[in-house]
Image 1 (cartoon, rainbow, N blue to C red):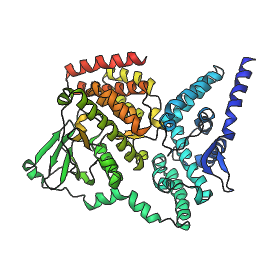
Image 2: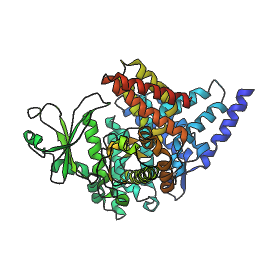
Image 3: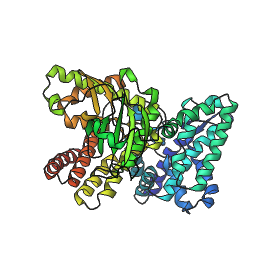
Image 4: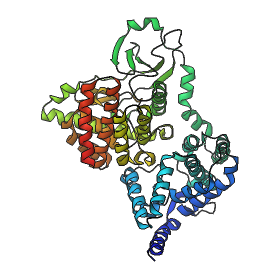
Length: 500
């Protein structure tokens, strides 16, 4: 019978999960297999499910757990913190692997398995959120049982940054997370690790917020300061003391929430801290952020105070008129600076506080429900994005365009505006520059690949350009800028045709 043959073939493939080893060790010194990780997650689900605030379908949860790492029978395990070309391609490799497994199975089963895997990746159901929490908790639980010598230094910090986000939706999961974290702290302390120093470093953003939570100037004096720039969200002012002040609205024609953007930028800049000096690249240092009291000023309502960084802005029109040699020089500098930025963002360990590209697309879909064209474009683009950003460990700038780059002659000196920082693919940051300055594509990508060792994928780059155009299309509609919306629509349709 054909169905029996297909099931047997898939089970033979899945046997690899018993042999595939993870970056986790057991209490007897042996490495944990993927299958053992999955078993422990299922056991945790059985024990914890009765205590959840919102009841889950345990059978469905078991299915999600069984399927969530099935792709690793094809791809192998790729650790969370690994930095490699293989890691950069992880989302694509896993999407291809689950499609292969779907096609191996009978048609009555394959699509369901594929759907379960996607559900886990996106965390769109209560059961998926529960399973994703267990996935992260099990890792730390196993680390606590193993010798501290098996931990990498970065895993000392992950005790405080990796689990909380996934457990925040349920009080029992939060309490369970605290208990696991407490055991980890005890292990670290007994091993001579200064836990308080780790906490102080990671809590730097909170401490800074408390110290400088007062608005840095009297708002009535704002007119006395020169403006460094203005956008749809607000304005940036030079306070003439080596610092700048960004004011933002809670809502405008843009996508998302002004409060979320200010808080995100503050967290990212605070986490970067002293790490924000890669090869001479300057990034602002966070000094404080907060809400402007209504009685002082109703709009804008939010502020961010940072250090001022060196460099000058350059217009797209000016850069388009550069000579061939100057174009190559500037584009190469951007490519190298972007890799330095990505390296710093990766070291900052802020990934678990950020949204992914697919989640950003969901925000567009939810906010533009009354714009059927935008909603249609989101659905088309989501087919190409899949879960690329969900499983990617790469943190990207998210709004890497010419207006956010400061230059010294033809070299990048500083990068600003981290309000859109998210998890995604390197191509996402390259896309907006290429859209603005097509002539920069070749030398910029060549320089980026040279310093990073990463091979830029043309198809992912097209997808990233489509996402960039989608945001332009949606926002221009809100602004009633029909000329820009029409131009953006044509470019977007062309990109989607190239991807089809």
